[in-house]
Amino acid sequence: MVPLVGTLGVGLGAYTAYSTLKTDDNLGNPSKDACASDDDDRRARRLRRWAEALSAEFPAADVRGTKGAGVGVFYVDGSEGKRGWFRKNRVLMTSPDAAVVSARTAAMDPKLGEKYADLMRDGTLPDERIAAMVFLMVERRKGEASAWGGYIDALPRSYDAPLSLSDVELERELKGTNVYDAAVAQRAKVREMFDENVRPAMRGLSEVAAASGDAKLATSLNNATIDEFKWAFQTFWTRALAIPVNDTGEVVEGIVPGIDMVNHSRTKANARWEHVEDNTRPDGGVIALVSNGKKLGHGDEIFIDYGESSSEALFFTHGFVPEDDDTVSDGKGEHLVLYAPWSNEPASERSEDVARRIEALRLRNLPTNRVVLPARPPKRGIRDLEVEAKETLKVWVADAFALDNATSSSSSSSAAVDDRSRVRIGDVLRAALGSKSASLRDTERTEEPQTDATNRSIAIRRYRSSVRSTYDAWLDALADRRKW
Image 1 (tube, helix red, strand yellow):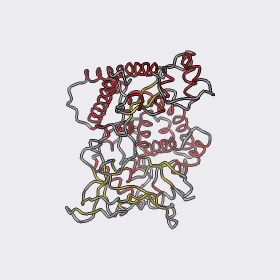
Image 2 (tube, one colour):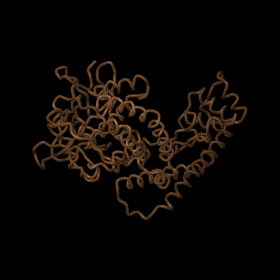
Image 3 (cartoon, one colour):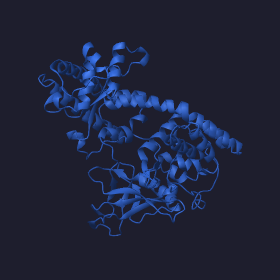
Image 4 (cartoon, helix red, strand yellow):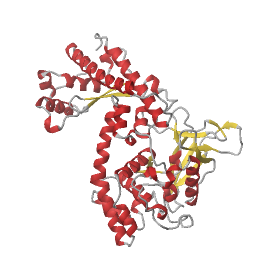
């Protein structure tokens, strides 16, 4: 197996000196770090210096600030102003495996690595993603003493995704949307992860730091906050790649400094990334940014496709809705998720009827708490819904007799929907979507006049507009009771 991360210390000694730790009171809030006020060009220069010290190469790319989208990566070929064909498969940038931020990186830390490995083995850090997030938190708290300091300081200190909104902002801006429901659940999960995994892990790492004589770091790690974990959580999920490391299909999830600065576009994607194994390198290889052959001129921005299937997923994870994304207007790749009437009920308080419906859904390998519909209603109504959606909705509205059949493991299912079920399904959809639409109307009605032109506010308005379009299309279609 080719190791994904290797000898980080090689090449970094001349770049990073171990010095005093940050000791100010702002460590619990990443947005108050000194580097938080740096402009994008300064962050880009800091990243490039750090990466080049680690043998990253930029043969045809540069990292710079963009107009409104943070740091980006741009094509450079020395032909200022000229426009020509981007040679296919041209290597634009490479980042060594040694620079990847992952759980393996954490486990190779010279002082804390063994403890990271122990925490993963005993389940305190239950997966490699959380381990990488904790590593980001620890390295940020080390400050200038971190070998990763140049990269950590180049990262944003705040994000625009819903997780960064306050509870009041979330309610005010997104009530009545799928993202609101998902964000509420995500916040609870992040808090649970912090309390059950991150805080105990930081305490364990603090003990090792104290035993090694690093009292300042030990004290600092014990003071970790939920705001820091939200920062690390979003840093990981907005940047991580699933990197294949050999021919067996093994994948390492990690952040690739430099390549993580490439912005997204479905329509303008002109590059891709790939892992290149190199047995002559002590760290195993490089991750390369490679052109795909589209026409591009010197100074044009390089884009990749992040791969999320919908603009809603991009907004939830990354905090933006692409302006050039035609899925927003025509519904391609988009979905409408409706949660079951019992989805917010504690399991201990559910009725026997609800328990039987959930069991029927499980027997058919159907989602037990939601149904996924297309963003645009099918022209012929319920008959053209996907089989899974029809089967799920049939269980939602089944009467006692139908439910008895549905909970029998020997019963067969049918994609056909009888008239009685069709009417009930139509009523359920009209009620659910009518309620969500009313909540969104209230949000839109109470919104302040829009003078805010931040990326976050623009993304929220663009997302809400797409949701409004979806609700209106469905409610118009549901008015035809012959089809619904």
